[in-house]
Amino acid sequence: MDVRAALAVAAGKPLEITTVQLEGPKAGEVMVEIKATGICHTDEFTLSGADPEGLFPAILGHEGAGVVVEVGPGVTSVKKGDHVIPLYTPECRQCPSCLSRKTNLCTAIRATQGQGVMPDGTSRFSIAGKKLHHYMGCSTFANFTVLPEIAVAKIREDAPFDKVCYIGCGVTTGIGAVVNTAKVAPGAKAIVFGLGGIGLNVIQGLRLAGADMIIGVDINNDKKPWGERFGMTHFVNAKEVGNDLVAHLVNMTKSGADQIGGADYTFDCTGNVTVMRQALEACHRGWGESIIIGVAGAGQEIATRPFQLVTGRVWKGTAFGGARGRTDVPKIVDWYMDGKIEIDPMITHTMPLSDINKGFDLMHEGKSIRSVVIY
Image 1 (cartoon, one colour):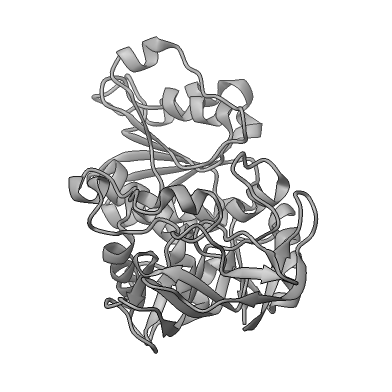
Image 2 (spheres, rainbow, N blue to C red):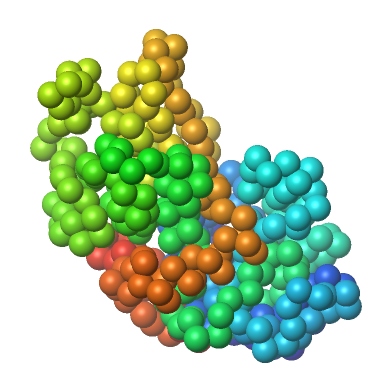
């Protein structure tokens, strides 16, 4: 069937709005009509050419929401008409990783997903008879897409597509890093580096967890009111502090009985390896944990003095906020619908597919928290 899509033809080039062909679902697969999709920094990371796993030509997009329109043989967990969110981190519930209960990184389709194809090694997308790559197993920059059954989360039908699509990546990644990965305790002191969409969701996750001190760090003073809106208690402009940023943050976290200082938890939401080091070193000696959420460019490495780790600080990474997609995403949708978390203010721009490149421009200019394409 013909579908409309934003096609990434090559690294560094604008997306081309065109008609592509989509095959129907095979065994264990579902076809979803995408109703809305967010424009995420990860999409930009791949489109820029910085992603070492980036493949072209491809249909990008991984933060969507829509309706199941067709299911392939053997599909039992969803049916036609179900509302779903595509999952770039699937949950098969059968692989060693899923069964371990120690990680959300399901390995059932990881190899083929990384190759830009479906589990059987083929693509459902093509143009003029030539194969197109899937992206992160989702490809939500098309108004219809095909996914493995294990890569869709069934959600309640009263949830608005243009808001809950954000749960497909940004919301879950930020809040999950707090709740699942760090397991932040009430009363904690925390520092969040980078107050974009992910950082703001980390902040509201910290508020949800009951953190007492939530310091937001950014280089843009315009982010201060945004952070405060979601629960930030203190703001620091890293440019204004300069080379003394870590010392400044450590001093901020000192209290009467504790003159060592440092945060119980820090979160890097920038993808900048220098900031990752600062986040670790702003942790409290003996027990501080630093969570890396941002993705760095190809070939970049993190570094610190071993002393920082020997004295009890912990460096952790997190993907999709440690969430098990089919299990946890419906719960986060419920949190939103029940008013426990906010999404609406972060959807700063909406647009049709024809304007998707404007959404990337807004991101580059720092004018949007999240732009959403509505089909």
